[in-house]
Image (cartoon, rainbow over all chains, first blue to last red; front, side, top):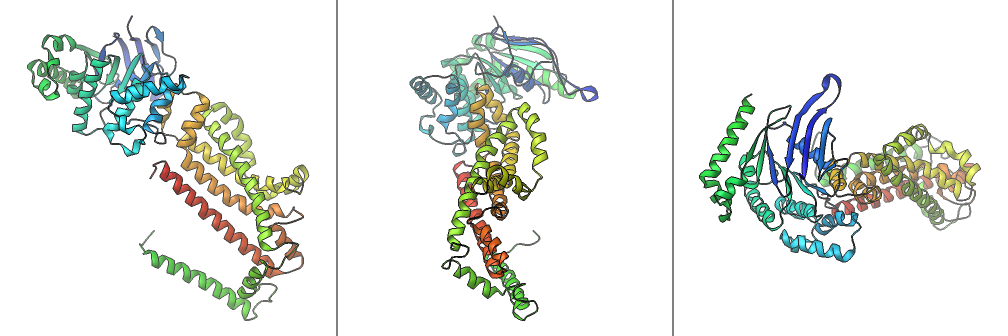
Length: 262
Length: 260
């Protein structure tokens, strides 16, 4: 069974004359433990796709289901990492991570253990009692990822999570995410407009058209990555130098450029 | 602002304005332009103000009147905050509650606190209940409105984050909406504190025993205008001190929340 399934999804915003067709007939299946990135021109509706899975918006037609169950409302089985972090500024790092666990009515000791584990996983141990505004952007996004990971969610939804970070921090976070995906594989739906980021991180890439967004093309990255053994490199720039990487990236670029020029 | 001034210039101009005001007052009252009972001189008023701290008037000294006023005031304000803030937050979160309460609230909030005096006396008596209700009537609307607006305008991402974390209604109100709207709530409490204090004299018109408003009403009955004015000064200064204290509290809180 697919972890995430879009079935003939249509999405409109507004009513009457002002009605805007955002998504057109989206059909997509994301496998268990698969990392799927959606790329597309801005305003194509890629974030809308994520919001439908999160339960923040509802499909106008068709259905979105996670682990076989139709999405009705937001919930901790579909943890979201936002572009602007969306940490609670009045809670410490620990308090931010703890909220979801407390909502699950989990016992104190179990929570403490889980928090300690995820802090270690994200290299945040020394910041447990800091407030978000005391941390850099990169650190804040680590906290947001920790807050999502700690819930042990069915799927992880990441909406341009590194879009607000500076170039160097972004690279560090991308490498970090690859490391995480190895240590604790998850089903991930990742939204980005950065093609390189998508090729570096994803198993599969869905390329979307301009509005109304359709899925134009599905690119298999995983088979290339495995065949060419990208994993032997620790650093992103080494992977980006590989012919196989460049080839994939250029192909997706061309596909996107057709969209931008109309 | 059309110009920039240094701190000392601002203070200087403020002092100049105040001096001119008192000077004008002294001139009008001191040169016999109006009868002294009509407008007592500043010196008479300040003298009376100081005397009132030692000589009881209408049964009590000024500080005793003040403390009895402050007591009622605090109860009234506290009641307004304890009911108004949670109700405002809940109205900001639950649409149904908003739809039910808003028409009633909008209808009632334009009634001046003093207009409640007859019913306050009838329903809650002239002891402590009546005056508290008048102060409550003044302080309640800003508490509710600001909590409501605060809750309605919380950063949508934060609400989405809380929802995806599985946060229930109760925790949403207490741990997300309340802290997120705290700056707005605090501003509301400050406005409420001002309006509540202003309603005090009205409240104390119906109190038979003590309070600054009561003192002023008694003085008015015996045409002791310096005493009435001394009461006005006491109300003004106390109001100012309350506002300063709340501003301090507000900036302390903002600092703690990292809002600066």
